[in-house]
Picture 1 (spheres, rainbow, N blue to C red):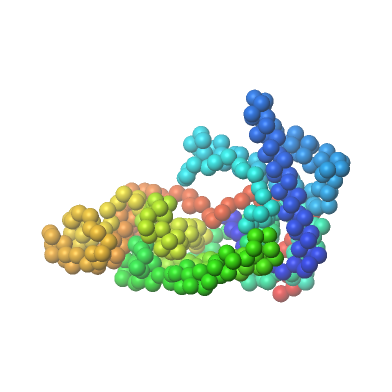
Picture 2 (cartoon, helix red, strand yellow):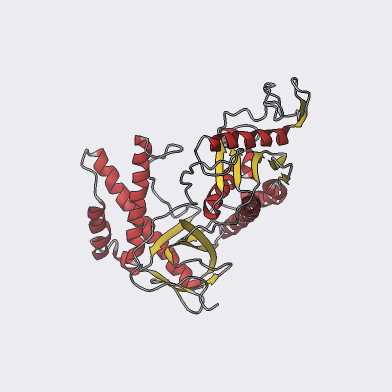
Length: 414
């Protein structure tokens, strides 16, 4: 399975200029190739192939006076930008034809130097891990990296990213074997909410940290300072970076919370069942800010790829399942209830239920029923073993041929 490992990088002034040049060249190649394909489509001409674009917009463009500066960056950066454009078109065509699951994917768009995120992608021909702990990037130099953990295998590709707050990150993609954990007898159903971030069927509650709500006061002050700065001034740039850094802190804290909570749940349970929520629909209601602050989609995605990595079972329960209307004791459906009702009594058996815990128990029962139908492999309520389907890992990415400079696993020098 393929996994991505992110590390913070600290380039010096000359390396920042080289990276900025690489970001710009990759963006120009993307826009030039996209413009050629759009013009060919508007003129009714055949689809321009990648080989023709590579010859026209990279090889021949370097020999012209207008694009001679493309030769100042690694050719791998330019070729990978063209490959990323091909991937964007492929995803768009697959979405139109119904081959791609999920939301409809739009056609590729032009990139701007004012985008909040700049990135370049490299294969093993253009980067390598050095013995002193640095990462060599072609025509950039040796970048200092803060190694927070070891790489489990030699990386197959590298993405260098600059975010809106001015931070540089190195993202390695590695091919690893699943790290199977010892089997557990417990399984759990999870009900996600706003008052409590998650309620498990065993009664455990995970409180919602509300990172954005806690940072709103400081964000409002920084936004006021930004609005008072003159457009185009250096002070406005400094104020914008302060706002971006505050938002980055909120994102980092939320991601750290999601990782810790999802890892603990996966380690403690052999099977995890989660209700499939319509987050995009809830994001258009009056609860939109709280819904996006919770980050349910990112948390469920972490549960899914960690379950595949550690040999656990992960199942989504359909969003149409009435988990809040059923009695977890007798199964009687008592009808919909407004959100302010947190406890209710079953009209059939008289059992008193706490709303979130009752929903988590119902999700657990429905997940076991789905598993018993043969969709995944786990021990169901009767102890039977049934077939399991493939669960995709997090953010898969195609690797690169192992040519050029060698790389090694782990942290160099340690």
